[in-house]
Length: 274
Length: 274
Image 1 (spheres, rainbow over the protein chains, first blue to last red):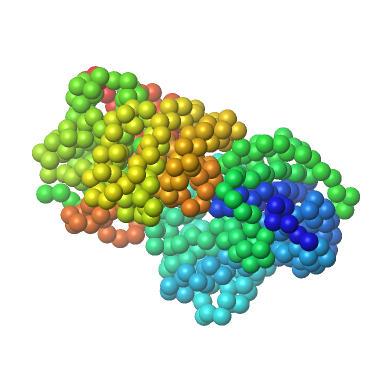
Image 2 (cartoon, rainbow over the protein chains, first blue to last red):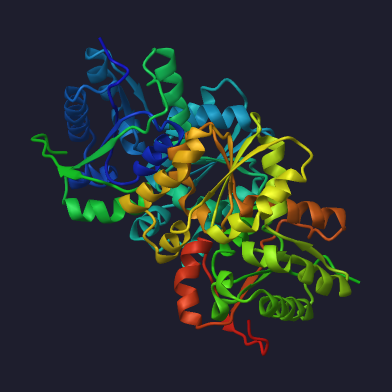
């Protein structure tokens, strides 16, 4: 029997998923959270898929062993490559799963007025076709304009958020989206919310941005409510962090991504390599 | 004759007003902006009012000499102490003025459902009663709960945004607001948007935050449109910076507040001391 007082689990290959956690901490403050950043294997995009699926299964199992009530896949690659594995492992514990891609596609399809939806993502994510397929599943004729932005996430990860070079790069990636007159943009990488104001300025105020964090927070809320697992009361919950790589490196970048105090971070190991 | 292609001017005693500029850059990207940070006289709160009024008049005149189409007072103290002076000087040039306080009061009065509006501000601003009076002018019976947060702005200015100490401080300032069950909070200091997610988490998702930047951007848009001065097209405009203190110190803190590339910053002098 799952208990509403249990924490929500979330994992990612690194720190990007912390923008998803950030939104959940703000939108659903009464919940407890456990976040695992698999930083030892970062980036997932360069790993062999079969091995990665085993790794993801092991992480999911470890999170479930902590008695969590929901598993959030806060990572595009893990969602594309291992969503089914996570669901399988979680189902054995009777636990639901919320991935990043589908909730964004639902929101984008619901809010676009002119039916022209942009997707800004890493090359891997664009090539996986995950967002295009998810948008096609929404039962509405949409024009999907995908732009691969290979250099944007590394720049954000590095911390050079607010310089002219990042702005120029964002401008060049946004040019085709402006030309195609999209009215809705899916931020298809968890790093991008950190430059959302820049993107909004470049695209103009009439384009609505759909971040993974915003969409996931809404999906988590809906899922917990549906299953009678939402935490009652208005007390602030706790959150805690695990990473598989060095703690200090995680802490430094993570604070910038979370935009909240980080508290304790513990290192964990998995015997399954990726 | 004022021309729609002219820039919007904005001034503040320091960098706080850059959160207002940030919102305008995002909400009204097609406009040009000129920002002046009177960093040599920072903070305005500790200056003698009569001298400060002369200083503010000189700054307004200098901005108007540059041929601007609107003057935004992006500073609570300058609005409280010198709003009338700015309006007088601007009126001689036939230019409108948008201050920070009134637009926030309008929005807060319009969106509160339970009529319980919180104001979080510096001690000076709370003691000036400016927000309370502006809320009373909205023609609706409101319960106004004001909390002075003397330590919050200095902490934000310092840059220790995301540590546990800032969070604890925010929690203690929010405690009376939670107790009084406000559903709307005016962020009565231009520094506070930088910790808005923390405040939102502490207060819960049902409390709506009204930042100066958000309210001013809406007021600027409305005023320009009414006067036929809104810039057409969807090209990104320019922005430029002036400060009265050292340029390097301004640049360092300003980048964090603006969350955009800063570009050129020039130092200017005023013969009128404050």
